[in-house]
Amino acid sequence: MSKPEILQLGPFPAEDQQELDTAYQMHALHTANNPDELLAEIGPHIRGIVTRGGIGAARNVIEACPNLEIICVYGVGYDAVDMAACAAQGVTVTNTPDVLTKDVADLGVAMMLALGRNITAASSWVREGHWASKGGFALQKRMWGQRAGILGLGRIGTEIGRRLEGFDMQIAYSDISPKEVAWRFAPDAVSLARQSDVLFVTLAASDATRHIVDGDVLQALGADGMLVNVSRASNVDEDALLDALENGRLGSAALDVFAGEPKINPRFLALDNVLLQPHHASATYDTRADMGRLMRKNLNAHFAGMPLPTPVT
Image (cartoon, rainbow, N blue to C red; front, side, top):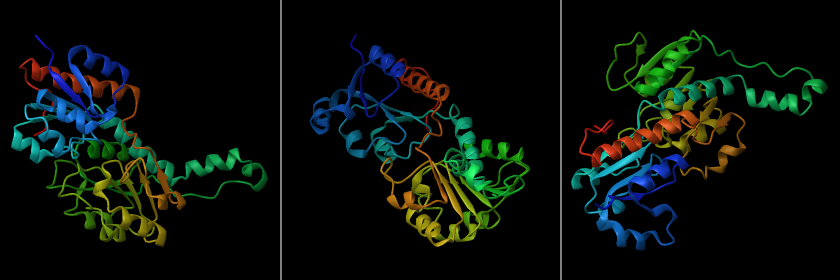
Protein backbone atom coordinates (compact mmCIF):
# COMPACT_ATOMS: atom_id res chain seq x y z
CA MET A 1 0.00 0.00 0.00
CA SER A 2 1.31 3.46 -0.86
CA LYS A 3 2.01 5.95 1.88
CA PRO A 4 -0.42 8.86 2.39
CA GLU A 5 0.85 12.00 0.71
CA ILE A 6 1.38 14.90 3.09
CA LEU A 7 2.03 18.55 2.30
CA GLN A 8 4.55 20.23 4.60
CA LEU A 9 4.32 24.01 4.97
CA GLY A 10 7.25 24.73 7.29
CA PRO A 11 10.41 23.25 8.81
CA PHE A 12 10.42 20.83 11.75
CA PRO A 13 13.16 19.52 14.06
CA ALA A 14 15.26 16.70 12.62
CA GLU A 15 13.66 13.96 14.73
CA ASP A 16 10.15 14.93 13.65
CA GLN A 17 11.22 15.26 10.02
CA GLN A 18 12.77 11.80 10.06
CA GLU A 19 9.61 10.26 11.52
CA LEU A 20 7.41 12.03 8.98
CA ASP A 21 9.62 11.04 6.06
CA THR A 22 9.54 7.43 7.18
CA ALA A 23 5.78 7.16 7.62
CA TYR A 24 4.52 9.35 4.78
CA GLN A 25 5.28 10.61 1.32
CA MET A 26 6.21 14.17 2.19
CA HIS A 27 6.05 17.19 -0.13
CA ALA A 28 7.83 20.28 1.22
CA LEU A 29 6.06 23.32 -0.17
CA HIS A 30 8.18 25.75 1.84
CA THR A 31 11.41 24.70 0.09
CA ALA A 32 9.99 24.36 -3.43
CA ASN A 33 11.54 26.50 -6.18
CA ASN A 34 8.05 27.13 -7.56
CA PRO A 35 5.47 26.52 -4.80
CA ASP A 36 2.48 27.30 -7.03
CA GLU A 37 3.63 24.83 -9.67
CA LEU A 38 4.27 22.12 -7.06
CA LEU A 39 0.89 22.71 -5.42
CA ALA A 40 -0.92 22.44 -8.75
CA GLU A 41 0.90 19.19 -9.49
CA ILE A 42 0.51 17.38 -6.17
CA GLY A 43 -2.58 19.07 -4.68
CA PRO A 44 -5.08 16.40 -5.82
CA HIS A 45 -2.97 13.69 -4.15
CA ILE A 46 -2.58 15.40 -0.76
CA ARG A 47 -4.51 13.86 2.15
CA GLY A 48 -2.86 15.71 5.02
CA ILE A 49 -1.06 18.96 5.82
CA VAL A 50 1.50 19.52 8.58
CA THR A 51 2.24 23.13 9.43
CA ARG A 52 3.45 25.46 12.15
CA GLY A 53 1.16 27.70 14.18
CA GLY A 54 2.55 30.91 12.75
CA ILE A 55 2.31 29.63 9.18
CA GLY A 56 -1.10 27.96 9.27
CA ALA A 57 -2.80 27.03 6.02
CA ALA A 58 -4.34 29.56 3.66
CA ARG A 59 -7.56 29.05 1.74
CA ASN A 60 -5.80 28.75 -1.63
CA VAL A 61 -3.62 25.92 -0.29
CA ILE A 62 -6.59 24.09 1.22
CA GLU A 63 -8.70 24.45 -1.91
CA ALA A 64 -5.82 23.22 -4.07
CA CYS A 65 -6.02 19.93 -2.16
CA PRO A 66 -9.54 18.61 -2.90
CA ASN A 67 -8.86 15.27 -1.16
CA LEU A 68 -7.44 16.86 1.98
CA GLU A 69 -8.61 15.16 5.18
CA ILE A 70 -6.60 16.65 8.05
CA ILE A 71 -4.37 19.60 8.97
CA CYS A 72 -2.03 19.03 11.93
CA VAL A 73 -0.67 22.20 13.51
CA TYR A 74 2.66 22.17 15.34
CA GLY A 75 1.65 24.68 18.00
CA VAL A 76 -1.36 25.66 20.04
CA GLY A 77 -2.52 28.57 17.87
CA TYR A 78 -4.48 27.74 14.75
CA ASP A 79 -5.66 31.24 13.86
CA ALA A 80 -3.50 31.17 10.71
CA VAL A 81 -5.49 28.19 9.41
CA ASP A 82 -8.49 29.18 7.32
CA MET A 83 -11.08 27.39 9.43
CA ALA A 84 -13.96 28.40 7.16
CA ALA A 85 -12.26 26.73 4.22
CA CYS A 86 -11.66 23.64 6.35
CA ALA A 87 -15.31 23.50 7.38
CA ALA A 88 -16.49 23.87 3.79
CA GLN A 89 -14.23 21.03 2.69
CA GLY A 90 -14.78 18.79 5.73
CA VAL A 91 -11.16 19.00 6.84
CA THR A 92 -10.26 18.16 10.44
CA VAL A 93 -7.76 20.38 12.29
CA THR A 94 -5.58 19.40 15.25
CA ASN A 95 -3.12 21.37 17.36
CA THR A 96 -0.70 20.71 20.24
CA PRO A 97 -2.17 22.25 23.41
CA ASP A 98 -1.06 21.65 27.02
CA VAL A 99 2.48 20.49 26.20
CA LEU A 100 3.69 24.08 25.75
CA THR A 101 1.50 25.79 28.35
CA LYS A 102 3.94 25.97 31.23
CA ASP A 103 6.92 27.04 29.16
CA VAL A 104 4.92 29.93 27.72
CA ALA A 105 3.78 30.90 31.22
CA ASP A 106 7.37 30.76 32.44
CA LEU A 107 8.56 33.14 29.73
CA GLY A 108 5.65 35.52 30.31
CA VAL A 109 6.54 35.91 33.97
CA ALA A 110 10.26 36.07 33.17
CA MET A 111 9.58 38.89 30.71
CA MET A 112 7.65 40.80 33.35
CA LEU A 113 10.52 40.47 35.83
CA ALA A 114 13.22 41.25 33.26
CA LEU A 115 11.45 44.39 32.08
CA GLY A 116 10.27 45.53 35.49
CA ARG A 117 13.72 45.20 37.05
CA ASN A 118 15.51 46.26 33.84
CA ILE A 119 17.71 43.18 33.98
CA THR A 120 19.09 43.50 30.43
CA ALA A 121 20.27 47.07 30.97
CA ALA A 122 21.67 46.18 34.40
CA SER A 123 23.73 43.38 32.85
CA SER A 124 25.10 45.83 30.27
CA TRP A 125 25.88 48.28 33.09
CA VAL A 126 28.22 45.71 34.62
CA ARG A 127 29.70 44.43 31.34
CA GLU A 128 30.51 47.94 30.10
CA GLY A 129 32.33 48.85 33.29
CA HIS A 130 29.82 51.45 34.47
CA TRP A 131 29.37 49.81 37.86
CA ALA A 132 33.03 50.37 38.66
CA SER A 133 33.28 53.81 37.06
CA LYS A 134 29.87 55.34 37.73
CA GLY A 135 28.47 53.43 40.69
CA GLY A 136 25.34 51.41 41.24
CA PHE A 137 22.59 50.92 38.70
CA ALA A 138 19.46 53.10 38.86
CA LEU A 139 16.64 52.05 41.16
CA GLN A 140 13.89 50.01 39.52
CA LYS A 141 10.25 49.13 40.13
CA ARG A 142 9.10 46.61 42.73
CA MET A 143 7.26 43.77 41.04
CA TRP A 144 5.93 41.66 43.88
CA GLY A 145 2.58 42.83 45.20
CA GLN A 146 1.65 44.61 41.96
CA ARG A 147 -1.79 44.33 40.36
CA ALA A 148 -1.79 41.84 37.50
CA GLY A 149 -4.46 41.50 34.84
CA ILE A 150 -4.76 38.40 32.65
CA LEU A 151 -6.65 38.88 29.40
CA GLY A 152 -7.83 35.40 28.44
CA LEU A 153 -7.95 32.83 31.23
CA GLY A 154 -7.28 29.69 29.24
CA ARG A 155 -4.52 27.19 29.91
CA ILE A 156 -1.65 29.67 29.60
CA GLY A 157 -3.41 32.49 31.42
CA THR A 158 -4.25 30.19 34.31
CA GLU A 159 -0.64 29.01 34.60
CA ILE A 160 0.59 32.61 34.60
CA GLY A 161 -1.88 33.41 37.38
CA ARG A 162 -0.61 30.49 39.46
CA ARG A 163 2.93 31.78 39.14
CA LEU A 164 1.96 35.34 39.99
CA GLU A 165 0.38 34.16 43.23
CA GLY A 166 3.91 33.32 44.34
CA PHE A 167 4.77 37.00 43.96
CA ASP A 168 1.82 38.06 46.18
CA MET A 169 0.27 39.86 43.23
CA GLN A 170 -3.34 40.99 43.16
CA ILE A 171 -4.79 39.08 40.22
CA ALA A 172 -7.75 39.94 38.02
CA TYR A 173 -8.77 38.46 34.69
CA SER A 174 -11.17 38.89 31.80
CA ASP A 175 -12.68 36.13 29.72
CA ILE A 176 -15.96 35.30 27.97
CA SER A 177 -17.48 34.51 31.37
CA PRO A 178 -16.30 34.14 34.99
CA LYS A 179 -14.28 31.04 35.86
CA GLU A 180 -14.14 29.03 39.06
CA VAL A 181 -11.04 30.74 40.40
CA ALA A 182 -10.36 32.99 43.37
CA TRP A 183 -9.18 35.85 41.16
CA ARG A 184 -11.30 38.92 40.42
CA PHE A 185 -13.32 38.93 37.20
CA ALA A 186 -13.43 41.98 34.90
CA PRO A 187 -16.09 42.09 32.17
CA ASP A 188 -13.91 43.58 29.43
CA ALA A 189 -10.36 44.50 28.50
CA VAL A 190 -10.66 48.20 29.37
CA SER A 191 -11.98 47.57 32.89
CA LEU A 192 -9.27 44.93 33.39
CA ALA A 193 -6.56 47.35 32.29
CA ARG A 194 -7.83 50.03 34.68
CA GLN A 195 -7.20 47.73 37.65
CA SER A 196 -3.83 46.41 36.42
CA ASP A 197 -0.22 47.48 36.77
CA VAL A 198 0.81 44.63 34.46
CA LEU A 199 -1.53 43.32 31.75
CA PHE A 200 -0.80 39.87 30.32
CA VAL A 201 -2.32 39.05 26.92
CA THR A 202 -2.88 35.28 26.78
CA LEU A 203 -6.10 34.77 24.86
CA ALA A 204 -6.42 32.74 21.67
CA ALA A 205 -6.43 34.83 18.51
CA SER A 206 -9.50 35.06 16.28
CA ASP A 207 -11.36 37.63 14.22
CA ALA A 208 -13.27 38.55 17.38
CA THR A 209 -10.08 39.27 19.36
CA ARG A 210 -8.23 41.19 16.64
CA HIS A 211 -6.87 44.41 18.21
CA ILE A 212 -8.76 43.75 21.43
CA VAL A 213 -5.89 45.60 23.06
CA ASP A 214 -6.42 48.96 21.40
CA GLY A 215 -5.74 52.57 22.25
CA ASP A 216 -8.48 52.63 24.88
CA VAL A 217 -7.05 49.61 26.68
CA LEU A 218 -3.55 51.06 26.59
CA GLN A 219 -4.84 54.39 27.88
CA ALA A 220 -6.54 52.57 30.74
CA LEU A 221 -3.35 50.68 31.55
CA GLY A 222 -1.60 54.02 31.78
CA ALA A 223 1.76 55.73 31.86
CA ASP A 224 3.08 53.43 34.60
CA GLY A 225 1.54 50.26 33.17
CA MET A 226 3.25 47.31 31.52
CA LEU A 227 1.88 45.15 28.69
CA VAL A 228 3.12 41.56 28.29
CA ASN A 229 2.06 39.69 25.13
CA VAL A 230 2.76 35.96 24.78
CA SER A 231 -0.32 35.22 22.65
CA ARG A 232 -0.58 36.48 19.06
CA ALA A 233 0.41 39.83 17.58
CA SER A 234 -3.06 40.32 16.10
CA ASN A 235 -4.55 40.64 19.59
CA VAL A 236 -2.77 44.00 19.98
CA ASP A 237 -3.13 47.07 17.78
CA GLU A 238 0.58 47.48 17.11
CA ASP A 239 0.34 51.04 15.78
CA ALA A 240 -1.60 52.13 18.85
CA LEU A 241 0.94 50.34 21.05
CA LEU A 242 3.89 52.08 19.42
CA ASP A 243 2.18 55.47 19.65
CA ALA A 244 1.46 54.91 23.36
CA LEU A 245 5.02 53.79 24.10
CA GLU A 246 6.57 56.67 22.18
CA ASN A 247 4.30 59.29 23.69
CA GLY A 248 4.51 58.05 27.29
CA ARG A 249 0.87 57.02 27.54
CA LEU A 250 2.05 53.48 28.29
CA GLY A 251 4.99 52.76 30.54
CA SER A 252 6.50 49.67 28.93
CA ALA A 253 5.85 46.49 26.97
CA ALA A 254 7.37 43.00 26.87
CA LEU A 255 6.62 41.30 23.56
CA ASP A 256 7.25 37.82 22.18
CA VAL A 257 5.07 38.29 19.07
CA PHE A 258 4.95 40.92 16.35
CA ALA A 259 3.07 41.74 13.17
CA GLY A 260 5.08 40.63 10.15
CA GLU A 261 7.65 38.82 12.27
CA PRO A 262 10.54 38.23 12.04
CA LYS A 263 10.69 41.60 10.24
CA ILE A 264 9.36 43.78 13.03
CA ASN A 265 8.45 47.45 12.86
CA PRO A 266 11.76 49.39 13.23
CA ARG A 267 10.03 51.81 15.59
CA PHE A 268 10.38 49.15 18.28
CA LEU A 269 14.16 49.19 17.97
CA ALA A 270 14.39 52.85 18.94
CA LEU A 271 12.54 52.33 22.24
CA ASP A 272 14.25 51.62 25.55
CA ASN A 273 10.98 50.81 27.34
CA VAL A 274 10.36 47.60 25.37
CA LEU A 275 11.67 44.08 25.89
CA LEU A 276 11.81 42.28 22.54
CA GLN A 277 11.80 38.48 22.25
CA PRO A 278 11.98 36.32 19.07
CA HIS A 279 8.64 34.45 19.44
CA HIS A 280 10.26 31.68 21.47
CA ALA A 281 7.96 31.18 24.45
CA SER A 282 7.63 27.46 23.71
CA ALA A 283 11.21 27.10 22.49
CA THR A 284 12.69 24.58 24.92
CA TYR A 285 14.13 21.26 23.83
CA ASP A 286 11.60 19.39 25.95
CA THR A 287 8.50 21.21 24.79
CA ARG A 288 9.40 21.19 21.11
CA ALA A 289 9.95 17.44 21.33
CA ASP A 290 6.55 17.04 23.02
CA MET A 291 4.91 19.23 20.36
CA GLY A 292 6.38 17.16 17.57
CA ARG A 293 5.27 13.90 19.14
CA LEU A 294 1.74 15.17 19.65
CA MET A 295 1.50 16.51 16.10
CA ARG A 296 2.61 13.13 14.77
CA LYS A 297 0.26 11.27 17.10
CA ASN A 298 -2.66 13.20 15.63
CA LEU A 299 -1.55 12.51 12.09
CA ASN A 300 -0.90 8.82 12.76
CA ALA A 301 -4.20 8.37 14.60
CA HIS A 302 -6.13 9.83 11.69
CA PHE A 303 -4.68 7.45 9.12
CA ALA A 304 -5.06 4.54 11.51
CA GLY A 305 -8.75 5.32 11.97
CA MET A 306 -8.23 5.99 15.70
CA PRO A 307 -9.59 8.87 17.84
CA LEU A 308 -7.55 12.05 17.52
CA PRO A 309 -5.67 13.09 20.69
CA THR A 310 -6.24 16.84 20.31
CA PRO A 311 -8.73 17.89 17.65
CA VAL A 312 -9.64 21.57 17.49
CA THR A 313 -13.22 22.05 18.69
